[in-house]
Image (tube, rainbow, N blue to C red):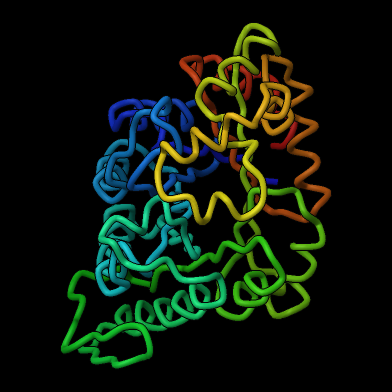
Length: 316
């Protein structure tokens, strides 16, 4: 099991994300995830830097592989532009960049006033977007007139030696089937062994399966739970609401139904290394190859020290 660190663009400034990436590398983490958002989930999180600028900066100060978790290449940014951004990121990182993609959330994608499609249409758009990006990474001039996108005489000149790998996020049977069919890997945030099994049996085979979870490092479990609830009450919002609510204000309204205990259940809180090891083992038992931990709150240096001394050595 590879253990990586998840950079939360919703909560930390670009300078903090860069410092965290450097700290993660020094602590012995094997790779990075980074979220791709236009908005944070709640105003309390307070940040949302442009992910492609951040990746460019990271490439110059850190040698860890980077995966977006995840980019939506369908509404807010045209797939031809995402293809160029991903190709440049791969060049800057010396081929250590992977593009994680998903069908997105209205929170980030509605900003131009476009209609927010239902889930089946979003999956259809994602498939076409992936087709366009892979064609552009071949290096030729591309014209495409599909159901959802048009590309005319487009060519990406700055390309990595190998095409960027695309990992696909999936949380339901239809999305996992698409991930198995078109993805070079699978992305999830749940320790769901059935999802991994479906991905592998429906065409994913031995391709990489990544997952992530959230932590709130603090001197006590209760202090960690307080920090988690302060910053991420949306972690307790159920069902498809996270895909359809359009603004941080709406997530804050929905989060009024969420208690601190509900958020605590979604995080690893405090400074007990065994709690982190147990969570990692849960993902390992589910069949994931890589797991990424995100910290919330100001004590991320403490989390790095915990992992360097007590967690990563157990999995090396």
